[in-house]
Image (tube, rainbow over all chains, first blue to last red; front, top):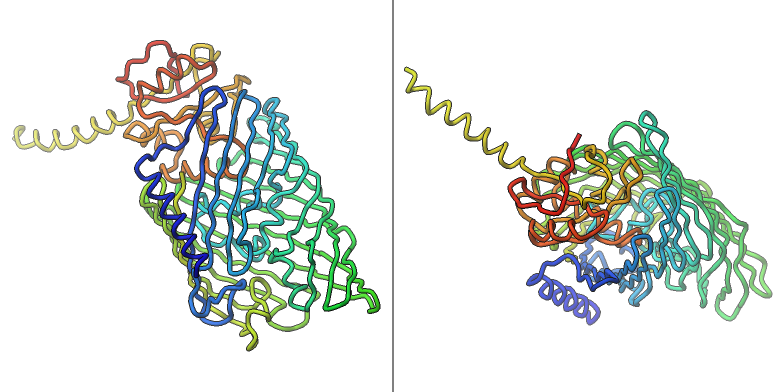
Amino acid sequence: MRRCSIAATILLFIHYFWSGSPATAQSMGDLNLQVHGYATQGFIYTSSDNWNTTNSTDGSPAWMEAVVNVTAQPQPKLSIGVQARYFLLGTYGNQIKLDFAQGDYKVNEYFGFRVGKVKTPAGLFNETQDIDPAQLWILLPQSIYSVAGRDSTLAHLGGVVYGTLSLGESLGKVEYRAYGGERVIDTADGGLVQFTDQGFQMPTGLSGPVYGGRLDWKTPLSGLMVGASEESDNPSGNITRGTFQGTVAGNPFSTPHVFAQYERDKLMVAGEYRRGTPNDIIRLTGLPPVYVAIDQRSFYGMASYKISEKLSGGLYYSSSLDRKAAFTSARYQKDWALTGRYDFNPFLYAKFEEHFVDGTETGYSITDNVGGLKPTSRMTLLKIGVSF
Amino acid sequence: MKRRFLPLLFGLLVPALCTCAHAQVVIIANPNVAVSSVTRAELREIFTGASASLKEGMQVTPVLLKQGTVQDEFLRLYIGKSDSGFRAGWRSILFSGQGAMPKTLDSEAAVVEYVSHTAGAIGYIGRATPHEGVKILIVR
């Protein structure tokens, strides 16, 4: 409750502070220094099954974030950016972390690079999945963009090279991005819930090399983009279970995505498919090894429409299936979502979203639902946000 | 009989004239921008952050108006997005670390002043706004 009061206070402070001065940036001299940010407060209610460590069946406001971004552009080709985030969802987060801290040098349209802690260009929305003010949806399709595990997939330590190549008037252009470095999965990451559900703890989290790339083809048909990405990961770390200690490691696995997006006037349509095949071996001293393997096939299709200057609406269907899981409701998840967003002004907005969920694969844990998981649930989400 | 049609004619012409008046947005650039015209597609790419150069390879820097009828008309004519949708796009770029927000100014006079003194700058103003020191780009 205290955390929520702090969240609400921060939200109100930022809103009132900036509502009197709705400038979009604070530029400072030749450094072109800009300070931007946003804050959100969410509310979750589920008809059955607590969601992502919240007491959502009773209605929970334990969902907020506040982000501050500082960007300097001392030269037209050089920019330096730092972004910090406070994130809270149930018992996840509740800490301030760096989203990115990077230097970016764009040589020309064809080639540029970023180094430091940089956002990872995987899939259609990975780099932007956390930017609530820029999204219509409260939750992106959880089959691919799980809100609980996103802190670890958002960024990596290392670099990205990027550029745009023209294919001529009749073929459009291709944007490329390639990246490499190290991924660190925090010990409190929601993506590790499969381990903690079985009584394992990872006191130092997981880490390992990551590399991959993304290609977007902006087709000659105005507004149509078709793309693909692939990423290779190999996380490992220490693990404990009771008094037993050991390691968790696996083979490198790749995660391919294919996606398309079409935007025309007030309409946006998008779809994406991803396959994830992480596999791990847990070796605890004195115990036989435990093998954990997942073969998750996920996809979604979404459409949104700008109904008026201030009101937007959208619908998506999201599905995921772990083909190696036991035949229970935790093997799959199907989710119909209906959403609406109202922009009171360019800086303040509110969102409403209703989910019709079948299956408990993502976001539902047996430790949060000691009485057992029900296979279906409705979820009502509200969010208010302010940005500057 | 003719007099009976005058109000009707007036009623038809006035909205049409108003529409034309609203459409008086011109694209301005620093005189060092070595082109005399741009396409609508180029404008859309430059002002949504999808590109930082014109097809001729000229690097340009967009400058925005904070609000007003010229801003709304520019977005309607050349970007095809509402103000909130337009700013959401820039927020995606900023908060994903892919770039900085463009310079955003309070008045058309300030845009003219900035563009005239900044190499590569490109902006938009109302046609009636004095625009000394900048060049007007034809939109193809």
